[in-house]
Image (cartoon, rainbow, N blue to C red; front, side, top):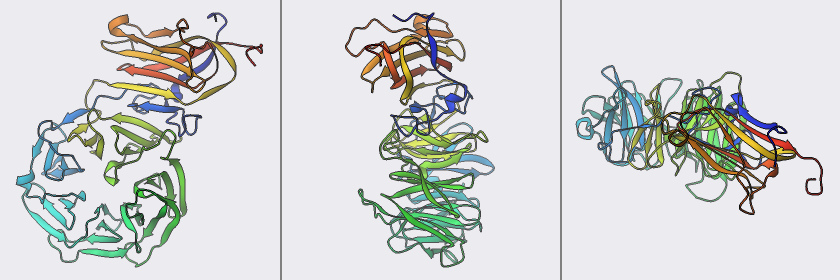
Length: 479
């Protein structure tokens, strides 16, 4: 049995290590330390592992359909969100969270919603075949472009201040918000067979993102990122020398264009061809990809995205100047999977497939969060002595912390999950975790690696975690 007097500290997670981010691999620290770090924003309280604030549901009992697009608007000097669903339009007060069904009073056209934006005082939205301007606060709806084919019609304001939208392999443009005159469904052709998925404004070009997959579920297809000056009939720069199953959408951060593909997350610029930042096929990020452009947004120095078929919201970036960008998992909704995201300048909002709308970072209660490290190998073997957790502040009511350590591809249990809680153990700020008496064949005391360390917290912030062990020499059983 290892004694505490012989032990040395072999691992500490504290300070900047909490900002190490998610690894792209479970079996090594590839771009980050953690294989899981859920509901944890490492930039909310710097150098502390703190579970995220519990999101506040807005519009309970009023919003009864799945939000497809959530759009900040201004009506008579007051900020609201318009929550557009296939059958309804809701107005949500950013100040109070009150939701109102304005489907009838706004006079909007119901049916499949393919895009939405607030621009020049109008709420502009697209159905399968039209682009329509709604005069905010009235029931006036004006057709701007008609005769569209059924596609996503994603909007973007260009550097020339005109409004553009996707239309299959075409780019449409709106310059007139009171009628169809001067508007067009085809001011640029992206290329035969291409379906445009997103448009971005890099300050000089309109950036076109698309592919020719035709929604085929398996295969590699031609993907494009094109840079168009909004006047010529050709690209100033076209990158089409990369492949993916399909492209989803993108955002711009620090002068770089980041593009979400079905299999990969790319980075490029007009002067730099696309390269892979991370993969969504296999590893930690297997299946973690956005639903579409409506669930990708730039806010607070990072790009946030709602993962398809998941209650989690992920992010890539770093608001601290000079530090490396990381993947992190700052939020989770408490009901349903994420369908779309919005940012009102202060709060993040998420619509879900369970017909709910959540606002983040508004309340005071905190939820639960878990961290699992990726594989941490050691240069020699150790006999486990103890682990220590130091809290940010003393335990409060209903808070708890648990820890578990495994080795040998999780086949060896160094210490099984042990929980401390305020309700059982009272007010405390430091806790020790010892190895329980071995009672199964998987229990081990000697280990050469930490395959994962699981750290769970409900409501409590954690300042530091330490693992201590006794170094083992070369023996008949330890080589």
